[in-house]
Length: 232
Image: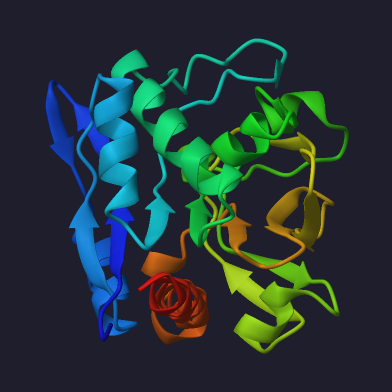
């Protein structure tokens, strides 16, 4: 299979599914075939659609309330139930079957919640000595230290990375089977991964970073292609 099918979830705005073109372009450049994931209400339909895919990207979004510590601040809203239900189902299927998945911002947070992890509702307010991590609060790009011996370190090829910052919530405790692979200078968790590397999660937005972060998408596509070939 030359181009494995990579599902990409979307945002929801006034009844319309929307997707930043940069997600699609990143998957296409990495050699995958981008497939837009519909927000399905039927569980069986969601599972059937998930079976058509070889890999999955869960994109950025609003707030996660599963496993949340504290109350949401006024400048972030909870995810619409129809999106959250659809995302939960397709992501759970991929995690349970250990199929290649990239969780971006909300996508990492949701995967962490599905594994029993917890999340700060407002990390800046709840965690001592935490800097602002949202552009809404005048945050700027910051560095992330990538732990040695991790899949993320191998994929990015560096111990220190400058990333965008677009989040108010942040991981408090990693979920089952997930390890911390990247942290900001203030100690905020910026990346998680599974031991086998089939799941990679980042708090920043690699689709906005060009060549510097393209290894994440290349890894996802390569893992999806290998898995699809073995299943053929």
